[in-house]
Length: 616
Image (cartoon, rainbow, N blue to C red; front, side, top):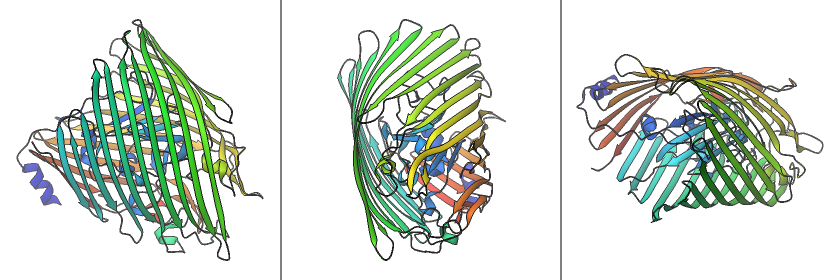
């Protein structure tokens, strides 16, 4: 390893890879940037992701402050994301603007991050805090993944590494169209395995001056094998058969952008997406927490979502701007499952259709160094109760380009998933929406300062959360409450020469206000430090030190246990040889060995090599 690093550092330099400009983010429909947003936003550009080639989406996201992912790809298990201590179903995941959350999931519309591939991504946006005015159900935040945009280039790449990591990707784009494909495998098959394949395509066409048409399509396929949740994992599970999950998804979107005479814009978008899933679980043997265990289960599901969006944005003089929107969504889901109790098999089938119409308005008013922004979303589900999602924020900048601070408050609701409403054994059609109140205060120094820094205090109150009541009869009910309070920080700057250091972290307290239960996978402290050391023009050494605090977990064979804290070090060396980009990585260089979940150990030290060729 040392010889390879020395060879890279002394090799001849090549041309630098261009760094793409920062993009405005999707936290709001009003034009904004990550630095100016009232929410805490992390933007990972293609240049930021270059040193992470070959890693999975969950590997990349778990390195970000305030995010916990309970299981990595190597385990083959369901990778749930906890953002600011909220439930996984309270974070919306988008790919090219299309929501990936599946309401047929028994986890309440959560997204399995171990079924998504990111080898061909352009950027990732992480929005912490309520973004539900324009993104329904994003009551804790959202993750937006963009596949590669059109320029005029092509690329072919591959990655290999320890723990049976294998991957390949290809992309070809022109100014008017783009296409890309990726394949990634991870895991040894005995303790866990994950394979993800995806194909993306896009097309842009100027209809006339001020009118543009955009089309995008994606097809993805995933295979996962791992020990079931709460089974005790590879070390403690009594039943040694693996759970298997096979998912197939597709999405198609068509959007028209029109410039209006008053200097504003009009956007009309149609989206259709589908997901099919086949799951087979061997069940979980009885143990300390549950004397009956979990029976074997086989399920097949099909879900389709069709959406129409209309947005109008206009400036109102020099100091204000306004956007109005109208959304309509139709969801159609069907699940067929069979529960095997040994002596007999019990079917549990259901299907649901739901139509929702929503309208929203956002406005921003600026006067001198003050900015006031408000928004309101109104949702009308057929056969359900109407709901309102208000948001208000106030910001002040101290002088032109100076430091700034702000405060925001937002209320929102998330309707129950199809599984929670319709499952014939535990479903409850009388469930009410889950509710959230988010409050934030932040301070940031000048954007062009030597060490740009942002500190955010947040407080979230979740009510009527859906929980399981053992009964009899067993049923899902609204009763849980969560209080989450915390502090986040992010700072970066230059050290000696062009060395750059970035510091991220979060401290939070997540609790049941009644003190009845302690919540799983909610560590108090997360912190990271990333150092980028450039050598000559086109050679970079990237080091990342990350600390994840201790947290509670539970499994059927053991009951509740506290997982040990973990400190990991990752290294990556990136080198360009004219048309070739080479990345040599050493993940978990300290060989930290603690459990991700009870009985599922974190992957040990791994050498990773990724190569990408872009023809001239």
